[in-house]
Image (cartoon, rainbow, N blue to C red; front, side, top):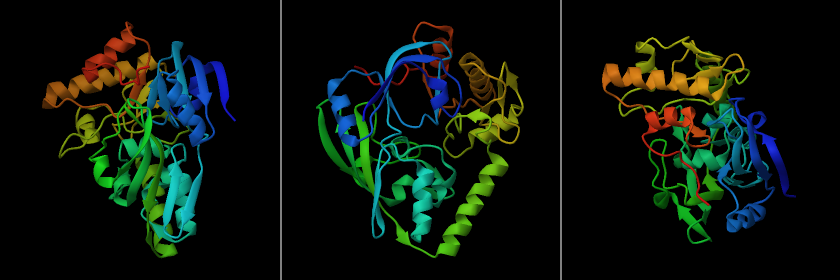
Length: 306
């Protein structure tokens, strides 16, 4: 059943725990409901679990579709079909139960498959593209449903063919048979790694702030620039990994963006490397926040146009 909320407090839906009220939040519960909404063109953004999104703390005059209630999945031997809003950790656990290997890296991911496919999520020498077979996609320009195979997806590091003209509806993956004990051991190692190096969601965060530049690490560069523990208002660079910003004390979006600009500018000045954000910012134009975001991205905010 379609759920619609006006003046929805968006921060309770995000892992960053930051954001004001959006004009309207719509929660479809099936692929067919989502398709009908996409045909209507009456929306501004389509998002999943909002695990890599920074919303403005100011109220936002936007209509947003959130796909996290579209979370069905179906296994057929070593293949699994998942809808866009399904969380990665849920499927990782289901694969473990079935002795299927290939999704162990997803055990600690807070994101959902729509966003993870778009960004070709990866960790610990595993990636979404490794097991991907095909996806059912809504083509916004032509208002039609198309199907892309692995080659057509053009997967790269943190990138695929999916952009604001395409919306993932569901996808199919093929896993390999494995040994339960080895699968379980790898997943436990991955969980331990995240505990040691990445912040818990007890402190709001949106995962890695910047993408790794080619043949380098954003965390390494930011660490060399001395950013671990750097604070701005209620936002703070994580002390164990400099490519994470945590919501330490009721941080506002302006705190995070100011800190991001310091990080971006220092690395550019010291190493002539322009870091590219891995997170998405959503806010209204012609504001100080927007100008800070534009300084980093050198482009307009990524959004789906009506």
